[in-house]
Image 1 (cartoon, rainbow, N blue to C red):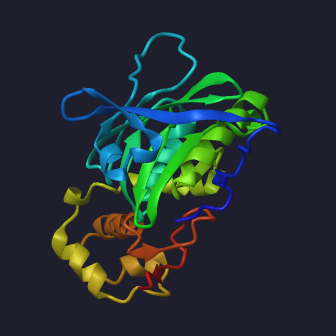
Image 2: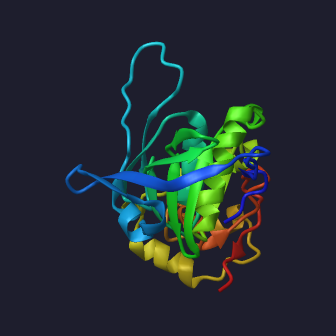
Amino acid sequence: MHVEGLVVGEGQPMAGATVAGSAVVKFRRALDGQIEEMAWDDVTGDRLSSAAPWRTFRWHDNQQHYSGAYWSATERGHVIYESRLELAHLLFADFDDEVNHIVAQPFLITMTVDGRVRKHVPDYLLITDTGLRILDVKPRDRLSKPKVRFTFGWTRALVEGRGWRFDVGSEPPTVELDNVRFLSGFRRDWLFDPTLIGELQAHDLHGQTIADACRLFPDHPAPLVRSAIFHLLWRRQLLVDLTRPLRPSRILTRREG
């Protein structure tokens, strides 16, 4: 799923930057907490998929960032975030049906650039239907800072050198974020009646408004039907224009393919 304006392709290497030696990656195994270290060229998606967050955080008074843990439908468990902006991108990743696995702060990468040892911990590793995706999250007003551009530049070069995808995410469109945040309230599949979900899936709702679709199932309470429709929207079995605020008058479309 691509959300217009969600991903910002900043992060090119600074002019004249030189790279020396090989990159090394360290990651913490989720199974036992032990740290593994290997050459960047040798690490695989399978190894990284079992990583635990490289660092943890604590909550305290007057902290600068809003951190926490989000229950992910993709993971069927909690994934950490260190800011509201990271949470926003975590919501979009969880909503993306091409994303199969989400790892927060998946590894520490170290390499020598311009004669100095550089280190970076990406914000998220997303394992998708089309391959690995590394996602860093940064406010838009910080993307032009030389240090940020430099770090994202050499990180991008390493990631794309492996044939993986590197994205930098900033502030997503407000309406789309509001809609995805709302639909995330309907992500827990065990809360919905399987019989009702089956009836909705069997019925052709293409072209119906949300309000009209709710009236097509009089044997079920309207609030339950509406909630089940929102659940199918979260699962992307039904689609709606998320660039506009959700309203009862919004048109539902079927998922092709």
